[in-house]
Length: 365
Ligand code: ADP
Ligand code: MG
Image 1 (cartoon, rainbow, N blue to C red):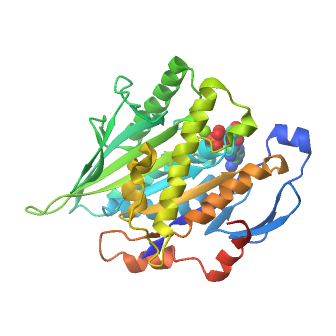
Image 2 (image 1 turned 180 degrees about the vertical axis):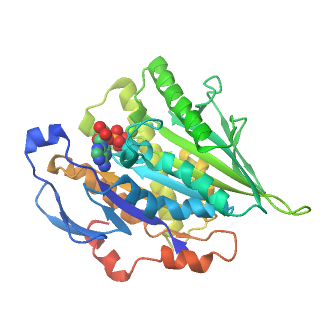
Image 3 (image 1 turned 90 degrees about the horizontal axis):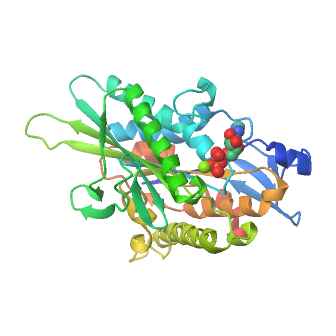
């Protein structure tokens, strides 16, 4: 049994933060897993995660640690999820997409293009005896409605559950892709569609959750059932509090809906970790579209990684603290992928945190 992989990432100070506060930062590097954090009252906390990516960390490091084990498993038909969490401007989309999906410096490419290449590379090296195919879907959740980003006419996709396949998005467009270039082009079209939809609805992308779904189908020998691994990447809506943005009207409604789905995510996480057995009887997956779509991922049949994106500036200390606390809560989830034979491997890779690490954050949990 493995735990969720939880990482923190601090982006470099923005020019505005530098202008307003100089070079001050609220974090102090201890090592690659631990840092100390000063809140707005100058109180200091120590945090430990599976890995901390500091301001100078490269996109490739994030991919290697957080995503590449999940990509390898998806090709072996184990579901995987990678989630970016944090306030608007904290670096979620930069981590997920990089500056651009199609054209950008190799060094700056985000998780998505690297995941695409990783999937095709793993398939190539998995041998000719097994045939794989990859299908891609892209949806956005805005105000609790699921929109198909490959077909904007499908603006209210329903979520269904099947015994054999788990959670399904009814009627969602699935594009078969046979090369990394094809997959990247489709992703780029989906991202452009997202922007079109947002302009039409007068919505900012930071107010919706964007979900990328790769289904990696494995065709096995004759008479055997084919297996599929679902790899879901989620660029969450900004987690900032309403009070800070002084929202009114529609913006306030958006903020409430986002808070509701992020709290639902938090509640699911709590329910998965509470009680003496470590699990509550009822897990409230149905409380939001987000948790419903992530049900398989958080519920056990999956490997999950959470990237908690933060600003290093003291001016954002309150929001960063809230993001880091969310990450610490998620750290207690225990996952049990359904495919046998991989449990030992995962236990080594993502083994449960040592008690001392958890104790270091008790004060704020
Ligand atoms: P979010 O999606 O969380 O709202 P973005 O990913 O759009 O935030 O990041 C906000 C700004 O910070 C963007 O201009 C982005 O290019 C920059 N940025 C974020 N993370 C990094 C990073 N690790 N290195 C360099 N620039 C970054
Ligand atoms: Mg974003």
